[in-house]
Length: 337
Ligand code: NCD
Ligand code: ZN
Image (cartoon, rainbow, N blue to C red):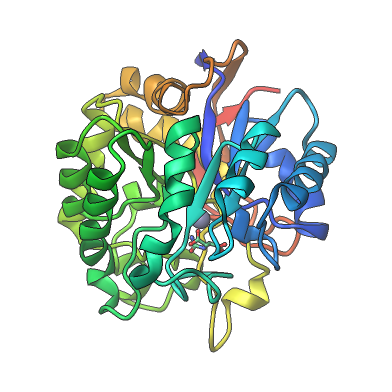
């Protein structure tokens, strides 16, 4: 039987949720990743200060176990002051996430792009202390397929106004975003999800409506998907893995106003292995999942390892009432016991 062992990877963008979903699903992340960035909008209300972040970190820890380390973030609000930023950083919070208002789940109360300059004192403080700014890079109010492209001017402005601030453009979906991240200075990087590497809009609305493939930002055109594949297989350290695994109960996906979010946690590493192997780029997987993100965040590389075995399995159609990505499909690699 084939086995492959790599350095323990990290997932730089996860929605752990709370309550039962957190309790029953956190192990799926912890069994294949050493660390994960816990998104702050995953709670309702979202994580606003260190006083929200620390209890949430403890709750994730309680349900993940096994040496797993959640990395905490705050959601940017109009009252995110330099003091809030410094206090959070002192307690180990690693990043602040900016959601333009209304752009995705639990972002109705986000700061509007037009008022971002009011948060410059917070960005200044983050730049000083080495805290990262994570961006949900979509411009509200723009036609959905063009939202990411329209947001790139905001990225460029932030990058030139804060040349020392580390910025991650999250879950990029377009050739334009790949190009922008390539050409901007080394302070700018991007996360890429598994599903954006595999899907196009045809997999959401090309035939029947496939709500479990619907996410924000929505998957785009074939040429965009190809650009993302090129980015991850080129070995450029600006591009690293963030799954954006975002579980929603089946009833919240299969309904008239379904939530955005693809639940990829159950299949993440096995499917990435298959994906890179099929492209003949297996040597590029380890740095994409285990090295580039840690280096950009200034974290030590994980010491442990993850072993996968070539042992086909059928993805269950449900985990705790949530339909996973590739439900019912056969996956070639499995995480070793
Ligand atoms: C995320 C969620 O469900 O929390 N959904 C998604 O489609 N990615 C929110 C987000 O990260 O935008
Ligand atoms: Zn997300």
